[in-house]
Length: 67
Image (cartoon, rainbow, N blue to C red; front, side):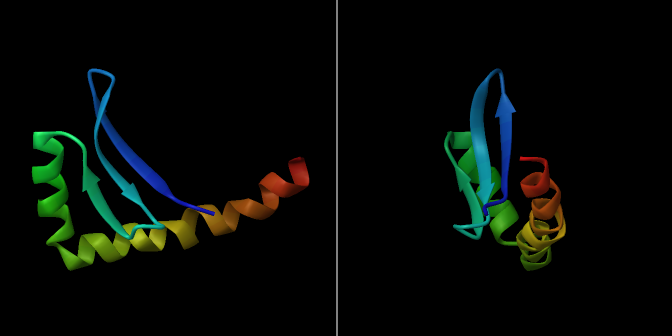
C-alpha cells in the first residue's frame, strides 16, 4: 500500500509525496523548490508520512470486502 499526494498545475504534475520514498519530489523548477521547502519542515513531513496509516490502512478492509 502506498500513499501518494500529487500537485498539478495546468495538467502538469510539479510535486509529489510518496509514502514509499518518504519525502516530496519535484518534477519542475517550481516543484523542486516546493519539495525542498516541504522536506525541510520535519513536522509537516512526519504528518504526511502518517497519512498512510491514517488514510490507507483504515480504508483497506473496506476496499477488500467490496471487491
